[in-house]
Length: 583
Image 1 (cartoon, rainbow, N blue to C red):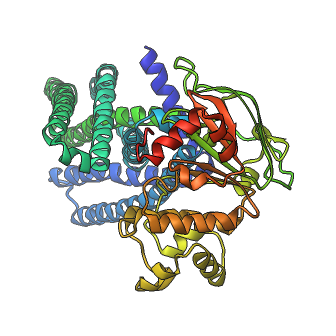
Image 2: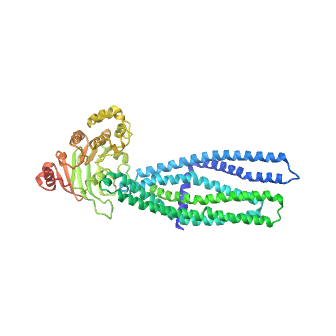
């Protein structure tokens, strides 16, 4: 029963998207109605034609020609109305599904960062592609088909009662039987469809994982393991689909065809036992024709049950995503004057059930200073940087940027004034220029100045179409250092007050590191710069070095000051001098 209530609520939400298309929907329904009326009049015209030719004494040749002409005209009108109706209805469907897809994409882009840490990307891919496709089927096919079959069914039933109410009553036995069959089908099909959808999601997750890690998989000969995983899920998917086919095969067309055959036999028996003369054969023909047509919308509506349940399951997943928690920002839109930063008693968990990541962080960073974060892997360096970026607002304590509470800042203002260069910058499958501007309106002259500043001009000269050259997906035709310099170029466009480098020089060659350090020395003049350091040689000139261990600040000071203390920093610096990296 809960499944049924939930399905009705989901269906109601899906139908609410028609609110902005009421006029077009009404027009489409009117066209559908008259198209079906002209279609239903066909058997009546044929019945009149049969009655005319069977009445030997009063046979009228002109009447027969006239009836044939009317029949053909009705068929042309029906086809024309049906064509216009489908065009109108499909326009509505396309508009609605575009709106839903945009809402889904907007919702995904507004998700908190913790979602991307915990939810496999394959799940989101399923939501965006498979589930929206099922909903498209709902608006494109299911609604149109159900409306048409519903109108057709009742107009045929009315016509049958008009011709002979006794035979019509016998035909009406189909209604409660079909209603019961559809209810039983809905109860059994929904859990199966949910399992099918879940198996598709699992397949998407594994395929996404496999493609992203193809080098590791081949290197460590994990191909068989992944193939077995895919085979196992595929078998589950196959098993559930076979259950669905058996359910459809039992409850839908075969069973309904059998019931309609019994009712047809009952009508013929009733006709024979009644006092109908030969002239009423035309009525029997019309009834048999209508019964066949009555059977089709019932079978069609029953067949739509399976598609409808798939659409409902997909819709529930989509609406769960649309109603999920979004990344929150404040409304403070005041201009920033400095890149000053302050942490006051900041604590943070990724998950309340897990251990604390940051412990009671208290830290002041002056405007335009050069700060380095140092520590072992998992010490909290990157987490601290992500908190500054506003990615995880669930921390306790206070973070102030330019003396403004981080949680109070408007998204646009925050993104304009603080930026991060990742260890693995994302390179879009777009032109070199677009990878720097990211759609922002910037003159080519300004772009070329930035390229020169970060020493990428030598690379640009080698590109076939200069800055309009298309880059390979994920920047496969670029070195790691070149990717980092593109990431820095993006940031130089906006000149943020605070700039974070998340181990930007960890995996690059010496030449690229030299270029980045040169660019850094220029940026430091007007920006508060925070570097998460892997090679301590790159942060010797930092104004302050913050040493983290297990989420706590254990040391801070300049390079010289920390060496004098002979503490944790001194140890790791000494190890690196001996080329023993413990990070």
